[in-house]
Length: 158
Image 1 (cartoon, rainbow, N blue to C red):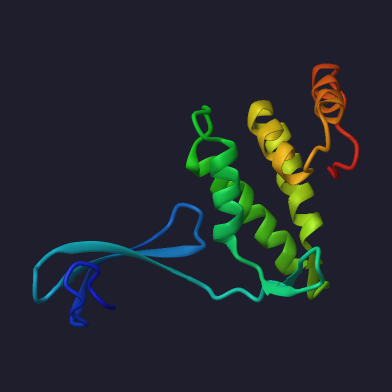
Image 2: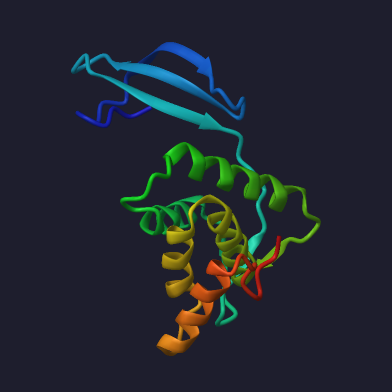
């Protein structure tokens, strides 16, 4: 493993532990050149389906894209990174167990919106406003009315 500080490739493992969820190994490493320590995580390489974009392109499933979108929606909200990770972990498991080898990006977006709706309504509205690309204020207001009325907004899959 290359040291992130000095780029030396000679590092050694000081400590290894199983993560709380049991799906990765946390390794504490030390560089033999600069003596600095850093942490790495080792995960099983998953066989996740390809994502079909709106324009028909196929891309590999990227956890980091979902994390980024959810973090932006949850910015300055009382939502922990652990809660976001848990949601994405559940989504990954569901997609891995699915017989489908390709998933439409819209299905991922709907699942994220559903999870955010249950987690934090403000984060949900932020995400939905970008994801659904409301054409005017009336569409946006209808979404808010649905939330205030206790309804599950249309097109959301539970």
